[in-house]
Image 1 (cartoon, rainbow, N blue to C red):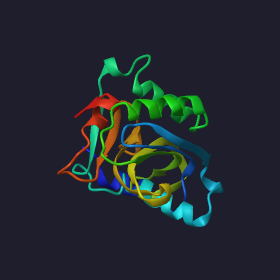
Image 2 (spheres, one colour):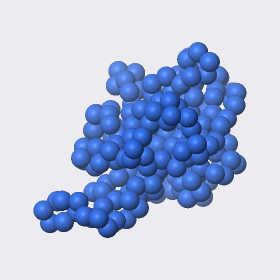
Image 3 (cartoon, one colour):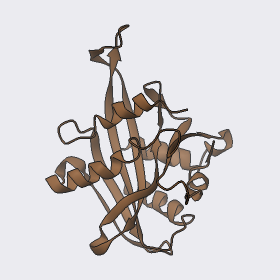
Image 4 (cartoon, rainbow, N blue to C red):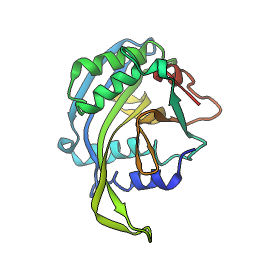
Length: 208
């Protein structure tokens, strides 16, 4: 189960004044999965309006209804080895999305299995959150307990002029469990519970 308070704690670092994101990367694809172009940039270099829009897109994942639209999935041990999506995500996270070769592999793996009748965007955010120590009275302290280094990925339908709409699905990796990094789990997001993209589970190699 996902703790709602953990997710709200993350979203409080997804504002213009308290931004935790370092980088954003992504690709544009047609309905058949053909790559139509990619981008990769420092999040802080974005114009103000772009920052606002992208913060809202990324925040849709942790701010969604926990244990309904956002559920915790686990990685099977056989899906955490060499050549796995898990290994790829760990590499993307450790390089802060700066390795374009890894990003291209990720886009290819997503496009090979994602099903849609419309052009779409795959967007990946890298963030770092200094998790503050909480005292016995649950009040925040100044010093950090750990740095939560994470990725948020969303898949959005493309609107006019290659503008991404609201996320249809996505994930938070690693999961944020008990205010700590949990790399054996991932939080998977589905916007429409009546029309879920179950292929995201196959892409990630995870299970409930």
